[in-house]
Each structure stands twice: as C-alpha cells, then as structure tokens.
Image 1 (cartoon, rainbow, N blue to C red):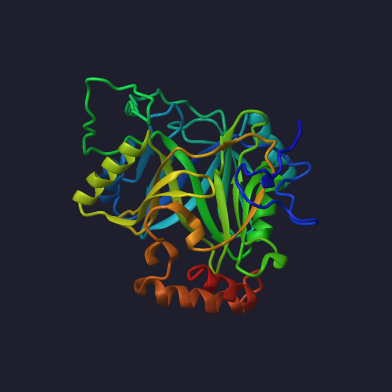
Image 2 (cartoon, one colour):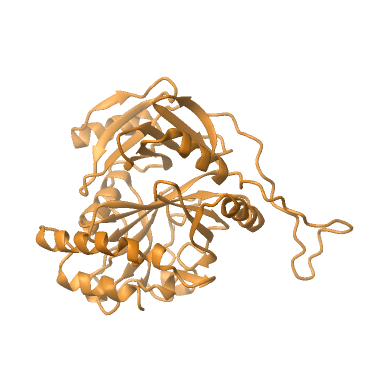
Length: 375
C-alpha cells in the first residue's frame, strides 16, 4: 500500500528529512492492538473512587486493597488501582492480538508469562522498558459488557439543520468516559525507549517534535499509534518525551462530544477539582481536550474528536513549543507545562540529577527544554 507523506497537509507542514528516524521498525516482534489499562498505587481508595466517578469512570471491582475502573465500551477495566503506602504510577498494559503474540514476546525477550487474576482473565508477559517502567502485554482477557453510553447531541452545523422544534440542554453531570485513549510518559532515555516500543510492540510514529533549534540532534517527543494495518487507530496511544525524569505525565479518556466534555468539566469544577488546562483543540492529534488533576496530583484528560490514522501515514515533524500545543483555547498553563512555582524545586532537582547520570538528557537538551515553555 502506498505510504502517505506527512508533507501533504494531512497532519503536518513538514515530513522527514533524509536519514531521519523512520518512525517504525522493519521487523517488530508483535503488533499490539491497543492500550489495555494503566496501573497505579494510591493510599486512599475512597478518595480515588470519588474523583473517578466525578470524572466519569465506572467501578467494576472494589475491595479494601484494590479498585478497578472502566469506561462504557466493551473492554477490560482501563485503570487498576492498588492500595499502597503512597501514590505512584505503577505500569501500563497493552492488548495483543492473541495469546500467541504474548508467547512470542516472552520467547524473544526471555521475560516470564503468567495468568492474570480471575477478575481479569487471560495471559500476560511482564516486561520492563529502558526507562524502568513495567510494561505488560496481555491477551485472552474477559470482555466486559457494554454499558449505556452518553449520546452525542444532534447539532445544527451551519446550514445543515438536523434539530428542529427542539432545544439543547446538556446536563451538568459527569461525562461518561467511553475508553482509555492514550498515556504520555517522560523518559531520560527517550530514543532508546521509543525504539524499544517500535521494535517489540510494533507501534508506529504519527508525529515527531524536536526542541527549538535542535532538529539536527533528532526528535525529543513522539506521538505513537498502534499498527492495525488498514484499520484506523488513534493518532497516539502512547506519547513519549525526553525530560529530566522517568515519569507519568498524563492519561486521556474519550468522551462522546464537546458538550459532554464541557458539561463534565463544569461538574468537576463545582466539586472543587483543579483544572490544569483547557478547553482547547490540539494540533498533533486534533482532539478537543480538557486537563484535570486528581486528588493525588496525577493529570488526566477528557478528549473527543481525535484523529484516526491507518498504517500508510508517515510521521510529521514540528518544533516542540508551548504555543504549538493547541490550535485554539487558552495558553498552556504553568501547571500543564511543569513550570508553576509549586513544581519548580522538584523540576530543578530532577534536572540536576539527570545531568549527573548517563542518559540522553544533557546540557544542550536542557537548554532546548527550557526554550519550549517560552516558544
């Protein structure tokens, strides 16, 4: 099938230059189909559940030690939370096409397989990416029944009149999350980690970003999708960025439309939850976004109307700038960019520590990162 260039105005003004990263592996071990779930440890499961319900997730399992959360789509739970002494991101799971792929990954990597708990079912191979993040690849899991979904409103768009003798009155209720869409991670070993996901999980890059003035040094962020062949996949299921620490940045959950997102945001705000940034529309991925902080400080996103690409589209290339993060909406906040006063000391310590270690985050990359927030 003919590859579509990124320079053809589909999603980026620029394509790759000669000898730049191709954005995919020639011979990946397997090709994962989607995100399965994210794993967290948190000290207060009651507080976690209260926010999850306000955010629009549903509970499938609740014990004194564990909480499973889901959207309305027919999938596995999309967030697994275990009780812990503190709060931390504990790993990510991807869904393989079948258990043969799980066994193939185990054979190639030498990693162990294990049956998953009965509440989830299926088989898992437990890996660790170059950043040290636990990564599971799973198959054969139980499929949850579809729940009633929040229906998009019937919209009169321009002269296309579809609603007559009827009004719009969206309720200020939690936006019903449909599914987990993507996770964003930061890594001090960005390129090594990116190649690991491409080579082992068969993912492909939709867009590369590079620090201002540093394109010749290679990309520093990538939006990575699953390779489903001719079946379209989310513009990114995983996004990775070079930075001074190995950490979770945010995760994103699809809702039905803009009204669900906006009214759901009003519901969260009325209950005192903190909006990090929004509402706006991104450039890479095109989705309408609204970012929130949960009570433990983890960033989560409601999104709708995201791009879907098949396997023919080649990566786009663009500078990594604060103003380049959205087509419209308020400017990116200091909280979203990690430059707020409350995070400044932690960020400074992370930068000092990263510069002392053997990784991809050197002084030149530090200078480039500092330019992002003011570009």
